Image 1: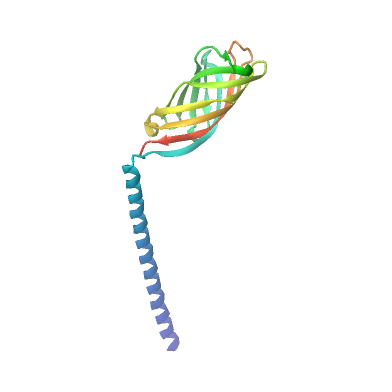
Image 2: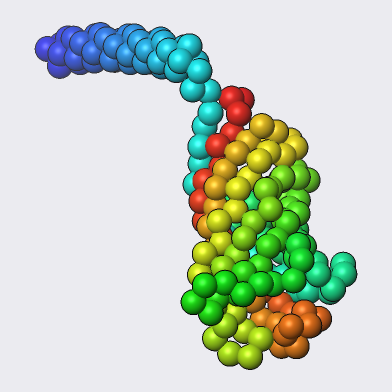
Length: 187
């Protein structure tokens, strides 16, 4: 009889503890939701309605897939999809023996979104006949379609350009590592 009464008391006490735990959890969650909403409303009222995310991956392209001055290839990583770059004029000599390439990028993600870019400048140094190491390659995203509508971002690239017939660019290839961030419009 005593065991039965003890079991009943323990069952009642544990039920009360569980009910209290569920109540505290619900109140805490509601409070957190309210404070998150208040914070989000405060951020929105300040005009800061962008969300930025780091991005990175690799790009490999071949010259001549579209025309002699345009590469075409693939991007991996956060912005995976198809890429191309069109040389805007002939490469020019820069300071300290560098070679400067002006490029217009074209990019479509695997989900079908298009990315828009300002023309970019790749500063390279020749390391062998027709082989160029990329020293600096800042790229600025100006928007796009789909989830990239209104997005902005800045990337930097490192890699190499292999143009075995340089200054003729037929038969060339590129490989790059890109990293940076994309800032999206408010969802």
